[in-house]
Every structure is written in structure tokens, then in C-alpha cells.
Length: 315
Length: 315
Image (cartoon, rainbow over all chains, first blue to last red; front, side, top):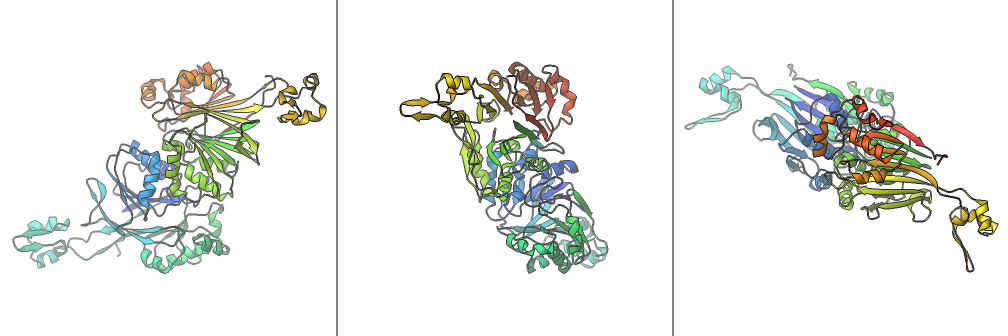
């Protein structure tokens, strides 16, 4: 189970009732934040999910509307009493951007682990009560995709692993002594003299986890479809609702509602949530049909929209 | 006449209905902004005073809650079509802080004139349709005071000059030819052969202008009294309402409501507006009497509180 909240759904500048686009994800009480624009702290406070438990912050790109709230948030997290490190992931240049922004928060009581997208894939599990990088037995896997914007920009996909169930028949067939079943089930590999027992010897088939994708800011392109394929939740920018704004979208490297819906349809996602609305678009709902006509399961995002995603027992 | 708006009245972090402390001043359609915390852009949008006409930005200090909104605001001002330079005043270190913050707004369509409080006094008038530094005939004079906070911090005082009225009897007594009266009245000095005619030869006595003072973050100290003396509006921090929080105020270098009111009383200001409330103080009104008991003309600030100040014809 995983909870997500859209902290804001605006692009360019915050306006009344519309802070800047950002997504907060909560898994077993620990948090992952994607982007941090102005106003995000206010939404977090309203949600009451807490600041101290933010373990990972993913930044799509360095335009002010996606990162300007970060120094303030880091300061607030410091004031909350956190001393454990925070992982910050972002495109190339992240180190120099963080060095710049840190001029106004020079003394944080915790370490920042800055990752200039060295890995493309970040395997995390809850270790020492927080989400940490860990190659073995990842519970959460974050992957990135290079987008097509006016600056280096990353799309993010988060996959919550679901453990296969224990299969006692398979364990017996593999002649695994019963005393090791529990440890193997938890993911441990056990060597007894020359014999190696591995988790898959006692576990059933893979089960589908939960996939959440976050794509902003970019023009649409084919690789996005594969990247967000079968997402349970596809949060995607829709800077312009009106199809007549195509040239604007092309020039500013953004998407129309209809383009986001087309990606959602081709990716066969379960739900599309549109976000990152142009500040001149007063009511995005006016253009709802431009997306819904292409992809039926579209929601127009709003600040503090939440979803709770559960494992699907049918798959 | 001058209009002021408190864009936010929070300290430390923005919370619902309380953005971070900042003051916007509008004079003849041009704007001076003091501090720029998170959420200030939203308040500006709600007020509808416009972004393009912000000519001067004064920063008290570099703690995130006073400056984190600046890169986003500069970006929005750029998007509004401004190409004229903006003056930014702040404590020593402003250049390096601005170089840091500019990593997320590297391409602004206007110049930033950074002033690390070289002058202590900034004389401005409206030249080429915007507020610019100008020693002669200043309409607005900004002065600074070094405060006592945990980092270098400046208090600001803004004085709106009021022109003396034209005095025809004085002009006649000074034997000023009538053809020069109008130019002298506008502040020009005229030399005709060996004879010099100066404005004061045709102008009456000085008239009181309008004074606005902005003091945050600091402990109270004697020099503040002289600095804010006789202000029409004294905007002052009141981080803590409860007098029992004195030790907190001392340790964190902030003020109690009662301390701010004491400064207001001793400075003989016309109105005190309290601001920069601790985020743990849910309703500052609860502690109103702690200030009002000392200084009767106290107002508890709130986001987007506005005042229009006019010249006082009695003085």
C-alpha cells in the first residue's frame, strides 16, 4: 500500500489555490518527494504527513518552479529534528545547484547525499527505519528517463515491489529443510557447507507491484510510453488544455491535455492525473473533455489531491 | 500617498493562511519589496498590484524564510516582460548569495544591481518611469540599521519626502525673477551669469513626509528607538506572544509582542503592526493584550493586510 498526494498542480508561478507541481509519496511512514516548488510546505502542513520522514527528494530539473521551495523545506526538515541523511536525486548539475541554494541554508543538521542521476535506477528499502539505497531486496525502485524540455529534465517512475507468497510445495520439492523456510522467505540466502539455499526456492511466482509515474516538463515522445507502461497512477503535465495552444506547447516544450491523454492511452495506465497547469489557465476543468475524449480515466489534478494505492489481488 | 501590504506574516516556515513575512510598498505605481519568503508571489497575485513594476528589493538577511521566494519572483518578473534593472539591497554577502540563488534563474531579461549595503542610505526618485538611485531631489529615502540577530541583518526605514509648498512672498523677497519660479519649484538650481537661484529661495518650510519602518529579525535594543522614531507605520517582528517565552526570544534572537510594543511606545510611532509569528503560535490574537497594554495602537498583522498612508496636513 502506498499513499500519494499532489502538493501543487501549477506551472511557472504559484497562484491562489494552486501551488507549484510536486508529488509526495508515503510508504510505510517514510516519504519520497518529487519536485519542490513554492507553496509545497504549506500543502504538506495541511496534509499533516510530517516533514521529518522525508528520506528521498527527486528533482526533475532546475527551473525555479520545480526547486525554489527546496531550501526552505530542508530548513524545516532540520527544525523537525532530523539528523539522518537525505538522498537528493536530480539531473547532471545537481551538485552545483545544491551548492548554490545552500547559501541560504548553510547549516543543516543532516547530510545531503547528492546523486546526479549516476544510477538511472535507485533501489531502496527501509533500513535503520528509513529508506536507504540497497541493492538487495529492494522494496521501492525508482527509475529515471531523460525528457525533452528546454533544460536537462528527468521523468521518474516508482515501483513498489510486492513479495511473492511463500510456496510450501515448492520448498518441499526443492528439499529445503524447514528450519530455513522463514529466513529464505524474508530474502536471505543461506549456505550450509556446500549447499546454497536461495529465496526463490521457497517463493511462488512474481506478483505485480504498484507503479507510479511522474512526467513533467517535456514534449511527448515515444520512449515515455514504454517508461510509464501499465502505471497504476500516471501523473503527467498538461500545461495547456486548449488544443489551439499546440504551437505554444511546442515552443515552450510542454504538453497539451490531449497529448498527455494520448500517452496515457498508449501506455495503458490505470489512471492519468493531469498537473502543471499554465497560470493563465484559470479553470483547467473547462478543457477536461480534450483529455477524457482520448483517455477515459483522466482526473484534472488539484492541490492536495490524494490517492491510496493497494496491491491488486487479481494480478 | 503610499500603499503598503503585508504579503505574509509568518516566521520560520509558511503555514496555511500565513505566508512568510514580507512587505510590499507601492508609490506612484512603482514598487519596493522588503524580504521575499515562500508564498509572497501568491499574495502579490491576490492583491493584483503587478510584478513588472517592482524596482527595488530590500533583503533583511539570508535566512531561508526571508529570501527563499526571491528566485521564483525574479523569474515571474522576467516573464512579465520587464527589461529594466532591479536594485537589490541587502547585508554584506549579498553578491555571493545572489550568485548562489541565480543557479535556478540563470537567464533573467533584466540586470540586477546588487548593493551590499554600501550606502546605508538610498535616495530614490522616479526617473525614466521607475524608481532609480538619485542623490538630488529624492522622493523616497531608504535607510538601514544593523540589527542584532543570529546573522547579519538589516532593519529598513523608508521616508517619503513631501515637497514644501511654493511661497511667492519668499520668492519676491529673494528677488527671484518670475520666469524661474516654476523651474525652481520643481527642484532645479539655475545659474544666470554670476547669480545662482536655488529651490529654497522660492519654497516654504519643510513639511513632514511619511515614514515606514520594518524591523525583523532581532532582539530589541536602544538604537531601534531612534531609527523608527515617529514612524507612521512601524512593522515589527513579534515572534512570540506569550511573555513566558522570553528565554526562547533571547536564545533565538527574536522579540516578544511586549518588547515590540515597548519599542513602538518609546519611538512614538503612529501604528505598530506585529508580524513574523512563530509557526507554533496558532492564533496570535490570543496575546494581543500583551502588546496593546503597552502600546494602544497595535495591530496583529495578517496576510494581505493593507494600509494607505497620506500626508498629514496638520504637520
